[in-house]
Length: 161
Image (cartoon, rainbow, N blue to C red; front, top):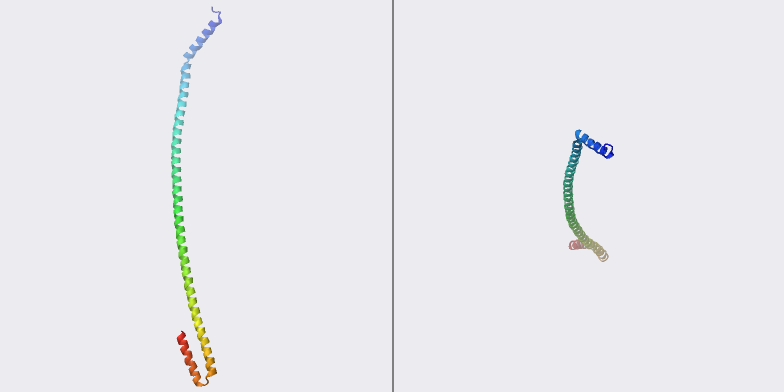
């Protein structure tokens, strides 16, 4: 009976288990496993906390991005309104400037016309006086002719001016 190898395997296995229990190895293994499970649980909790924090930060940045996009759209809209306003003001100012220039040109033309008429009248008077002098000089002689010429020149100049 002691010669059967199965008996000795059984005895050695029982002794091995007894030694394990005596040195509290199963408790140490269980404690090591519990510690390891606790660390894993703590790491999972930390990962969960970090994930929630990352989601909060992501939501905050997304909100900020939406706010920035809205602000950019508002700035663009305001810039378009201001550009339209300045374009209208520039158009009005240009029209006013052109109207003033046209008015000044028309006034200048009118003055030039008046001056031309005045010059023609003056020239006509000069030509008429010269013609009258020539006729009178040919037709009249002496002191009476000079007096008549002077009087005629004064009369013509007074009437044409």
